[in-house]
Length: 88
Image 1 (cartoon, rainbow, N blue to C red):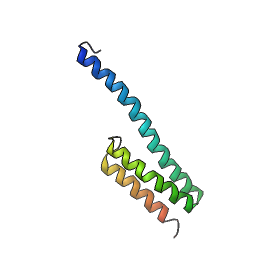
Image 2: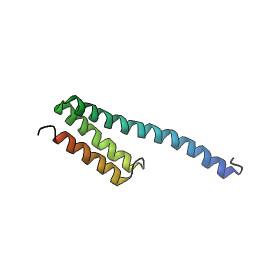
Image 3: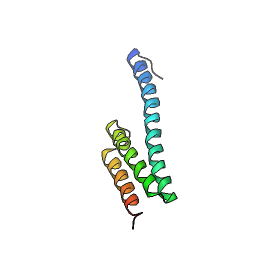
Image 4: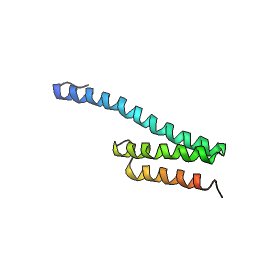
């Protein structure tokens, strides 16, 4: 338990950041899920549109520290490959 004033403040800040980070992580996951649902439905147009919306959101998550930079790039790359494979 936090005792000193500075540790109490850090605990409050951590609580606020946890809520914000949870919302951001959820938002990123939602965008990824929309792309994956479009891919499984077989609708390449919808998948491409969802990917165009998801890519900046994923990279924003990396900038904000929700995802590692390489993890974000890997997710975008794999989604992109899956959408492009729908034409073949």
